Length: 315
Image (cartoon, rainbow, N blue to C red; front, side, top):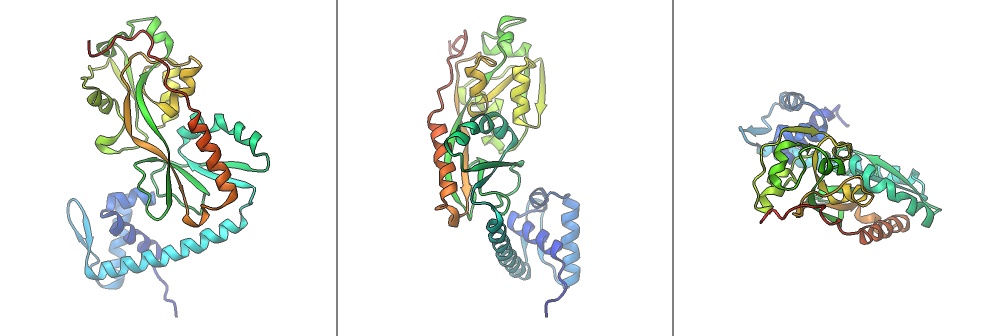
């Protein structure tokens, strides 16, 4: 006999144990922290056992909680695998579903997909954009293109491309107004900040760039924070400020002249783009066609254009 289980509470509890805290679990599940806390409390009352040892910084399971969390992870994992296989069986062998961030899709992947269509007319690529804040789900896509440190347990992971960082702006900012000849000139401009994700001190921020160049950022006239990387690029193209350009997202605009580099300094980003897929899908012909194509596109990527009229900051 299968008893009527509180599945939502079990899922929330397992996430708290796996993520070692309520806040991270809430972010993964897309609900409030208080909702997760209420789920766990309801589960403890239903079972008549304390399941977590709570502290200010992290929560750890009691012996009973550890036993339950392992059972939930195993059970839900098996259910997820079966659902993935069932959904895969209905997905056309002529369609490749790619999951990636909206900014990457708009500024890098979409402009290049025509090349894939012309060389692989028998295949169709479908793009499913997401925020990247939740783990890659093979039930929703064949391949994930993830941005981060490459830590995606349980999946086959391949490095697609790294990125470098350099300030970018519209040509008009160099030709009109206060100009941008030295780093100190940023004090007279608006700095555009990308707030799509947080990676702590490893995040590719203005501060990261300056710190790794041995420079000190001046206080800008104004800052503008945007929640999507493609909006940051578009704001820079429209002359609304100076952005810290991540190469894959700005290379096309630099090559066609919509953006220029005011300074010479370039820093390697600690984050990269990764191909993520299920281990049992590596040999799929359609996925290998896409992977080979996207790798060839990366291999053909040109270097950053030279900085335009910028003085060396170390002078």
